[in-house]
Length: 143
Ligand SMILES: [Cu+2]
Image (cartoon, rainbow, N blue to C red; front, side, top):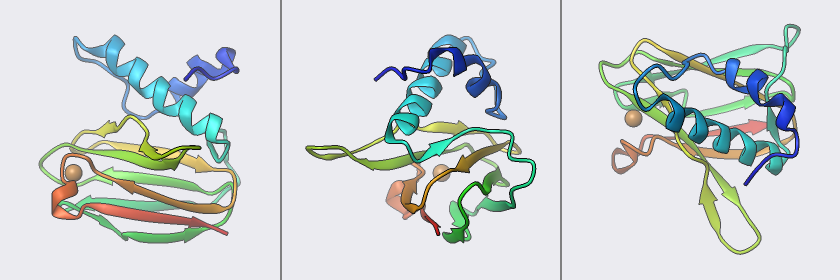
């Protein structure tokens, strides 16, 4: 899945607060790009300089998203902050034509944060794939 807006790639990746720094950096960057591209194709989430938008913060605490349910306005920013002593990630559920699937998970290491701008109305379910069995799930409703 490749976004037609290839020239936006560097800008998109640079807005991800946790830049890949490990030896798997290229692969991680690709996976983040793939994730972002999927979201852009989905047409509902994109990155922008939303300096006027409201920012909402979601903690990753005790293997839970807090708050697990959040209602925001279009163009608002959501920032996840990992306050746990372990890594978490975020993968969105997407309905394709045939079957639901998920975006590639974006890793949010401990003490790191990660932001997205939600551009369009809708309901977005996401999980931490590492701790999904512990019900580490969240929902964002954009009104
Ligand atoms: Cu987790």
